[in-house]
Structures are given as structure tokens and as C-alpha cells.
Image 1 (cartoon, helix red, strand yellow):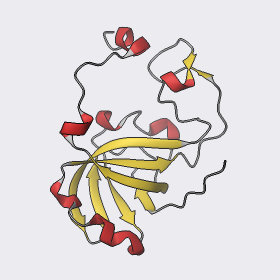
Image 2 (tube, one colour; image 1 turned 90 degrees about the vertical axis):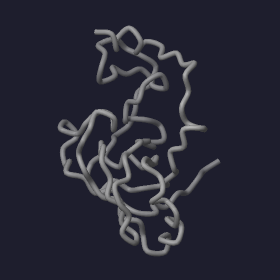
Image 3 (spheres, one colour; image 1 turned 60 degrees about the vertical axis):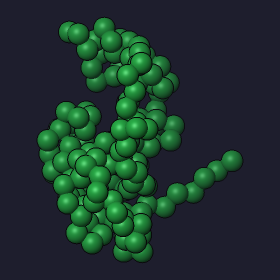
Image 4 (tube, one colour; image 1 turned 90 degrees about the horizontal axis):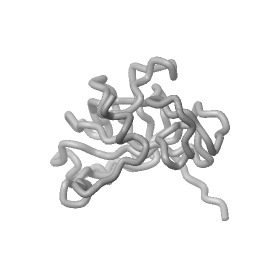
Length: 147
């Protein structure tokens, strides 16, 4: 089964080099802009009422993948699906960013962790009733996060 997805816009950021891009949006204070294609602008109605949004996008400069990877914060090999490594079978990325302001089809955001020109697949609002979990386990990362 194949799926064809078309970008609904593009993410603009100050980052052009993978090596200098933050590893996660919550570790970034960088500002950027989401430019939604004009035909999707009506879908942005009421988005400005949310402080944070999810951006789903394509890792457009990611090449290939391995099922075992060294994540950015660990020297041990882990299964790809137990990490947030960008080289994936389906190179889909996910970031939670702060929505600063909406101007027509442009969203000013903070917490950018993607390369400039990243194709945007979707936007979803961050809703604490749905998205915050308190009974979580963080696997291998739990021992790493205490270092």
C-alpha cells in the first residue's frame, strides 16, 4: 500500500546545516515561520487561540535509514523506533512549537528545530487534556536524562 502526501506549506528557519540544528523543539528558542499554501489558509481559522501547535513534516534532507542507531544523546545502539532519529523508513518529523502570531497564511513560531525549507505535511493544536500524560516511562532515555 502506497500513500501519496503533498505538502501544505513550508517551514522557514534560521538553520541550513543539519549539524547546527537543535535536536528537539523544546531545546530551541529559535524563531521561524510556517508558510501555509494559500488554498489551505481557511484551515487556520481559530488556530491563533492555541499557544502551541504540532508540526508534522518531512525530513527532506534525510538519507536512508538503519534499524539500529546511535541517538543524539546516547552512545549506545538502540532500535530506531525507540528513538527520535531523523533517518527513518518514512521520514516524518514531529515538533511542538510555540505559536506566537498568525498573519493570514503565515504563522510566527518559536522552538524551531528543522532545516529551512522543510516541507510541512500537517498542523495540529496542542491540547493539554489530550496530550499531557503523567504515567510515562522513558525507556533507555530515563538513565541518560539524569546524567
